Length: 368
Length: 249
Image: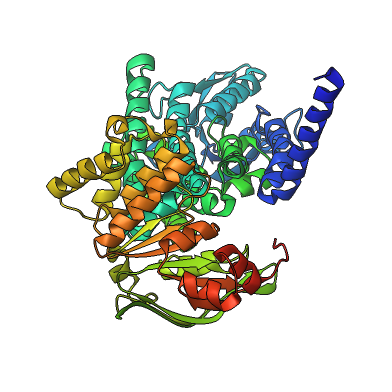
């Protein structure tokens, strides 16, 4: 066979592949949209600054010298961002423990306490100390706020900063670990359930199973139990590795961590079933999976805080279940919080599981 | 003769891109207990759709089907344990061994463990797969997969065996082996229902043959009668006589 004949055959195959691609609509959309979405999310998400971070200023100063300070903080806009760095709430006469509880509940990323004698000491050219509490469970935002305050107050010369440890000595790893566990569970449960079912639809094995007296509910349940065991085992291994290798700090209840992960895994399995039913074959499933799950990785605050992304992206994040799983995992594992704080997250995750499961059972058909 | 399957005014309409397609159009027939019943027809005749409805996989749009007295729509859970299905797509888990595939099916049909093991050993010997039982089925040839697939469908000792295109793509030796198996099962009193494109297969195996065309059942008779009525020398000629020469999509 001549080279020309070989090339001609290759071209025929190439055309055939494009023709097949053009007929797979479920594959086409993610295939072309995905790179665009990634560029947008990476571009904005990795900005490395903080915008509109909620901060509480407790101004107990009896004089007027603090007025310009709080105004400057409130109106500060980062060099590369159009939005102010902080969204400031002002109050007075609040105890430090009360302020900490506001951070526990996630109401504020930081609390700045200005003492009663602030103006008086400045007038006497004496040094005065402000107290800055930050949500150190979000190490990135916390670090940015601390650095900003240090640089900002350095200009005044006579104001020092007291920064108590709110949740112990935390590092980026502590911020990252709970969300990476949630992310792993999400990716794992969606991808393994969905690809397994899509593969079984493709090769006909699932139909053979459904020809037996087994109900489709049993098939779904069997796959779900398998996923729960598998994903929780993965979580245990991840947590163990974070503990043993990198010295991760755990401040909360293991039972609550397990509860969050079980509910979240159920949602992931449900989503996997829905996506496999829509895709119908492995190739389409993987493309669909990329567009559905991968954006979650970049905009739900796994690697950087939600406060660093633009508003529109944050609104999208609030539609994604991983956002709530990350929030609940961090609240429990870093802040040591209980059901009262993660209640909303659990309700959203339960709804996610309920909706995806109901749709999954509906779409999971007996016929080929 | 006692009917084991009763089909009355069966119709199936699919919606495709907003268009209604009548795959099966008002057909009625009985399958008698202990017979080998064949369904033949050109592509798009409605054989596979009828097969799927008979085996409880899809629900009819209109009409009724009773299998062993049970309604396919309301009592599908009573029907599945007494039927065995050999699908056209051989559908074996490639990363399980032959024996593991069989055990999986045996368990799903609730066959008691000891009985299941005895039957697996018996059938593996019967289809000459004993030596390959512990190999992954991903490495099996088409003939081996077809033989294993048959065992998967009979481990629970069904009364009725549905067999979709049993010998498509198989070599003559495997085809003969499959026919022997079919006759053996029928000799044990089981009712067999085939769909096939091979007229020779229908002629050799079936007691009665239903000829389908464009969703309708255009004839139902013994192969010899079909040939005689159409004045044809063989079943293929009779088939062409009944369904026309036009090539179907």
